Amino acid sequence: MPVSLVTPDSSARRGAGRVAHKGQLTKATILDAALQLATQVGLEGLSIGAVAEAAGMSKSGVFAHFGSREELQISVIHEYHQRFELEVFHPSMQEARGLPRLKALFDHWMQRTSVEIDSGCLYISGGAEFDDRPGPVRDALADSVRIWLAAMRRAIVQCKECGHLRADTDEAQMLFGIHGLILALHYEARFLKMPGAIERAHRGFDNLLERYAAE
Amino acid sequence: MPVSLVTPDSSARRGAGRVAHKGQLTKATILDAALQLATQVGLEGLSIGAVAEAAGMSKSGVFAHFGSREELQISVIHEYHQRFELEVFHPSMQEARGLPRLKALFDHWMQRTSVEIDSGCLYISGGAEFDDRPGPVRDALADSVRIWLAAMRRAIVQCKECGHLRADTDEAQMLFGIHGLILALHYEARFLKMPGAIERAHRGFDNLLERYAAE
DNA sequence: CAGAAAATAGCACGACCGTTCGTTTTATTT
DNA sequence: AAATAAAACGAACGGTCGTGCTATTTTCTG
Image 1: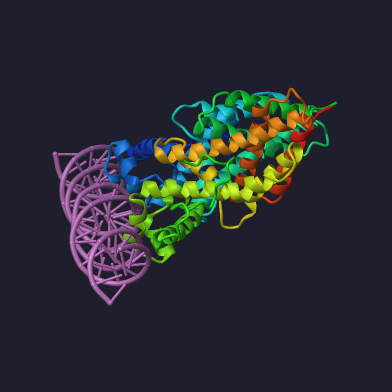
Image 2: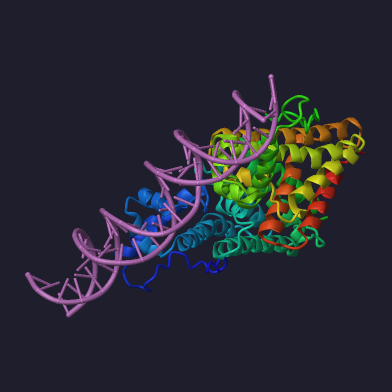
């Protein structure tokens, strides 16, 4: 249930005040390893055995924490959601409403998507993996993405309210364009290894701002 | 070696004039089934057993035609490349140089990417699957995509030469924007099931044309 | 129509998968 | 320190995977 991205209650570990039992610590360790692995081989490629080896424990030990592979995948998605909040959303919210915040959101998103060496974006790779495969994993993933896109959309609307963007701006249309820039960046930089993709994403964003700029 | 997209020698089956031996016919049948399967479960999810069942023959029978799973994957990519030429590239080349052709390329691309029911785009799903996995499959896939993007780029350059777009248009930048629209369309329509994505892709394209329009 | 060649099937292998179960080790509480 | 609960392990099961190998069938050719 990743429903925050507006109520930052992260790091509220289970137990409500009690000191964390050992199990939850290792569970966090496992999730850390699983998340890193998933960003490399995808959610579908995630195997319990590989996670166990990466976490330095036995297959059954890992399994016991989640009860099924599917639950592990969903947990990984929730973990990614939390980190996305922490590294992209929250820092950007400290910027002033309107253009500064929108720019910060885009910049942090870009960085998260492309710059980091060994972490492909789960939202992007997962979207390609699960576009034809219904089920709880897909639902969890889609929910997370929708929450994030909604936050982005809110930032655009605020730009209109602040008079930073034209009042008749179609926010869904602009969001579509921004989303495309991120996806193209991920594709051309990460898969095709094209140089200059980051600059093009930036320029593309500037072009969009110009297109929808007020006055 | 999918190096055409400029020399349309499709349907030139092996044997140079000789009538096709049975093996090549069933190989084509297998490839057809494999391609359809790959667009649903991805290149990584493609298994010889599943292809065999879909083609109505035994695992080993399928295997014998390719010698390895990897070779099957590469063959699927080549097959997809040829069909992409046939359904996207060649029809568009009948349009007049410049804007008409560029528009046709984009429209056909869009249709191929989103509208068809049971066929996700191999170039997109494959890009997400193999962005961290070097090897011959990734190379074959990336080569195909690069050839297609180069063709698209050529069309943009011709638009400049025809005076349909501003002479100082950065074609790589414009291509980046177009590519992003296609990727966003695929993502939002196919994965998130958002309505209106097709219209937004169209409007995004129009906005780009306006941005780079001559005079 | 015969013989050669190609195509396909059948079977077995080792590897890895997710999952289950009983046991053993480690933490926590009394 | 003893008793209890939680956590982790190790082995095994049934299943699927890709891949060899050997027959058998089909197709082509002289």
